[in-house]
Length: 216
Image 1 (spheres, rainbow, N blue to C red):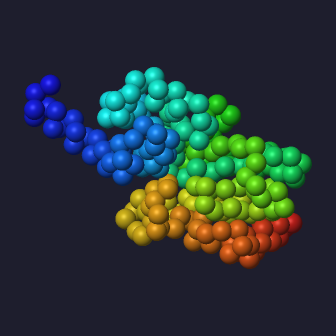
Image 2 (image 1 turned 90 degrees about the vertical axis):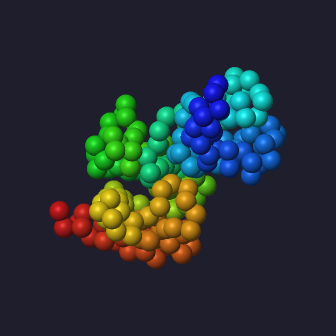
């Protein structure tokens, strides 16, 4: 490969190189490297996986094997906001299916499609979030947990996310992308960064939702 072409190729993967260097370029840190790459790109692009294999001096099959073995990794692009609906036993019996329906209807998704065309939102069903006492539960970007949700309250949360994203697109002070530290997502602004700090706001949203539902 000519020197100029090689340099251009390297520049294309500057971010990936930085991530690999932060982990010492060690094969033993492959999972951590892939986790950080996914936080950067919101998924694991095929060409990036191939580059990682070359940089670490291991077969591409090894990298692909790790990327496809662990459920946390995705080879398909995900939205800026990943909305996870818990379908564990407690959440299921308390109406998680209705929450999934609200999300898909609001975002224009069906059962065969999990991510919006503009790559803003992805909806996933997970077996358990670990907040059974707050069932039914929804989590946004692995940071913000909303518990004891009614369909009406969830609709309010989604409206907040959509409104914030429109503000961001218009050049306002919108949130950073998925996994970006130091910036609150719309969910964070609405509910705080953890369950404890967010309870009051979420309870208020839930009450508003129930009242709205009662008036219909």
